[in-house]
Length: 455
Image (cartoon, rainbow, N blue to C red; front, side, top):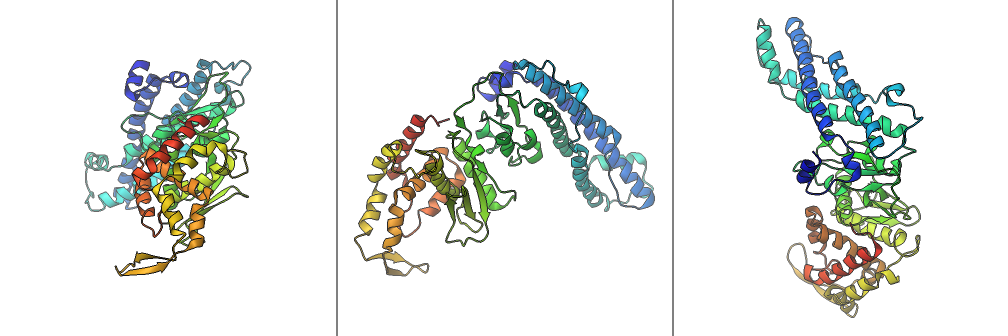
């Protein structure tokens, strides 16, 4: 089975992934999905029959049959979590056995109840138009079976129940575990958020839970509750890496705003290219509703906060620009000091100093006015903003713009490339044209390799 899975994902499985009993889990999930789907339909039929008989709106509850399916999966997760730890070489002698511990309540029935509310609405929407008065029970049952939603809910709930079982065992034995890895399925159904995270290693549960709260699912996954990714323990005796996954360095805001989603895309793109050193302190990302659109963001070196304006036109590129400042401040050179002039970045400084964009900015310093075109298409001459030019030419600003463009071009992320195009449309050449930037990108490639950050 390992060979078949490796052929599917196109790479050799890690030792942690080989400890997963894929066959057993897949069979159990498939059977549980069928059983839970049937139990939900039985509850739907009961509710509709009551509605037909009494006229009261359909109300769905979590039946004992549903609970039995979820409890079965939770127990399987607890057992397989224990077995995975043993397969990975952990000595569990003297540990409280998962059977003795008993299951924890992670409110999977509550999760199921919330999802059933949506089915109640669908029942009323679909059947209120049908005249079921006097209809046979078979006719009502056929109508219920045609209402969508049950299998989708079943898919989400069984994954949650299984992962919660794993989580209980893993948390109870977390003091033994030398680290955690993110594993994604890596097939056609793996989304752009989860794919770059595959193989990411986390030294602690705190780092892991920033990406996979309570071991999963990933709240940023495009599949939502259907996310199939999970955390796996690293083998016993695993030496902790000197690198930390990019995503583990940034604490995202709780709200799921447009800006937050754009930042997630940027983090996933950068995380597909490089890690960061373990010595770098984590930064907090804040969606700032007080910032005007003409001030899209800033990095606060005192609080280690990256502020992104909620009204920013290019929030993903803005985040990467400010992340460039954070990297200069925390990851390069001496932590806590800005590093654009350090020896590590000498190849970048040489390359960027020879670009047409920088030469043009320098040439503009000698001018008083330059031609421009207004929004209405009128050609005018405008005074040169020398203070702004000096700001753009500051080494830290040049590095931040370089880093953001490097992530955009090397990752090929379409959101970033679109926003890069927007950033090129200003009066001054803040970002580079592709050919002009390529030597700079190659220099950053070499720097990342020399630092040992490249993935």
